[in-house]
Image (cartoon, rainbow, N blue to C red; front, side):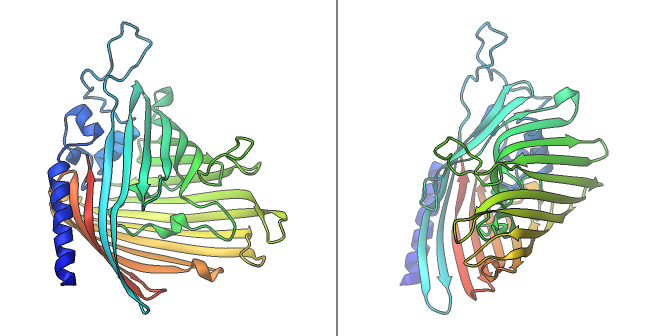
Length: 392
């Protein structure tokens, strides 16, 4: 009976989403193109989609017709129809461990509104607002301005909120429920990690296939301002740099470094400085857009980061390996993903090790049904999930 009820619920959720969510997101509406042009499957970006985003969400050879209002003022760029899109994810999970088994209706799992596009030539914006993420009103995460092709070079400038790890692998574009754990890891009382922060990003691309990225960020995430209306909690800034190289069309290698300093509070309310060093290589191997392997390793040292008692020179390292199989490239109706996560630290509570296996089937370009199995090696637990991922 329990199995029958679960299956019935999945069918109902699927029908509701299939009937209501057949329209297409903002950029596809703007240019009258398919989501397939940039995604395979959504939200994962193809190489062309990556170029489109890097060009300020514009096609140089395909201007959007009637995109701006004709006001008679050539100094005013006013978008005719403000571009909006919605992402809605619904999931049903079943968890087992040594103590209990539990079914959970995670519907909606997330609901967010997205917008982005050109202000004018070579100036663009992008943001999304989380109306609900796991039942919580989150607010703005990505929110930035982009100045493209400065000095007539492949040189871009970003200002706003973004993920420090975006030049590596974009967490928001992954296909699995399971995350890239090392990017989120915070050590002790430190607020610094490779996820969201406020700052600036400079990117420069060379004809040789070399990309150079440099970021300056506050280093304490995207929390609300303090009573002094300040976002940065200390006088320091953190610095991130990355260089990557394309080798042919199928290989990309890269390496990053992250230097940080932040004030943290010990258990006796004393303020101390934690100096953070991070570095790591990454690699992407792609075979004809059918098989893609993404590898990331990161090593971190904190000179002072406390947890219950003071620790010096805490070392943390981690990695993930992601394998994506789309049997017919961007024409695939189904796909498979395997993701392995590993984090090991001098602070044992940060240790993490998991494997996730994910399968998806596209009903429409902008809607897919997904199933995922995750095994947590630390807690020896199993997590099964099925659901719908949609964008409209």
